Image (tube, rainbow, N blue to C red; front, top):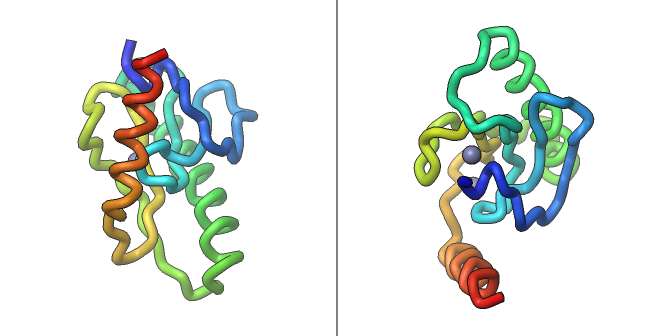
Length: 115
Ligand SMILES: [Zn+2]
Ligand SMILES: [Zn+2]
């Protein structure tokens, strides 16, 4: 079981209407993230295309509502922590991981394992 199969900590869900994936806030980055519902990296080109479209729709709603229509973001397909379960982030341009959020995430994980 990997953390993306379990999805124990969901802060906010944007869209779980598609049976293939769920779009939610990443518990570490607090940014929109799409997670394929199966533990695999192997999906068809069509699924991959549609999943990216869905994530872009969420990202545009979220970022452009607060930052304006010239706001830039990109779909980050680099999977740093969990390389074998498909998930992508939508990141604002110039985004860096905030140090205090990294600590928050570490604390959240610690608290979970105490239970
Ligand atoms: Zn998994
Ligand atoms: Zn993340």
